[in-house]
Image (cartoon, rainbow, N blue to C red; front, side, top):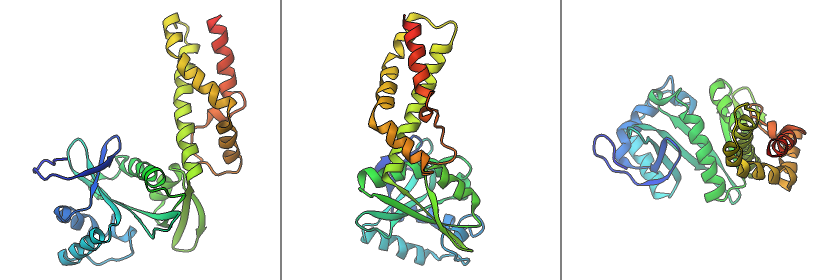
Length: 258
């Protein structure tokens, strides 16, 4: 990936708007600007309130590179602008702790949520983790909200920190439910529209079959069980898990086709 100032970086994986590249000394100016923003970044990622020197930051980056850390820098695909860093540290056989920092200029654009979801996918599907943890300061409610929406749940807290975690089965359930919700919404719009034509009905039949397989298969039951245990995010749209959500649509589809 090439940035506006002609620097080239090796992309390891991507999300819709973000390229995740290997951490590099070439981004040292951007790293320093981010971590030395005491008010908006530094005080949330380690408690230090004094700026880092260029030498300190360079030594840190070199150490992460030399230790093959699962640390990546995020660049905006459209502009090549630096967004922040993500890392899995405290790695064990079945899990790790997630850390993320987003530069002030790129906050409030949805990048935190997008990056967290994509990095969770990397952790579970590529790194093979079964559980991912994180710690967040109590006085950072915006971050807590993002993590909850991504599927993390609180497991412990004290006056300073909140410990959160997400397991692979919950992450996969959230992905699956979100995908099925999109299909349910699309099918519902077509079936309930007064002006739907025969061709419109035919176009959604693949989605109808996928909804039926989900509803009559074991995944729906396991997703419902997670929901009943309170393990799914509070803000997750989950109409597909209601008793009549998919069933009513399947019945309506039969009526429209008859």
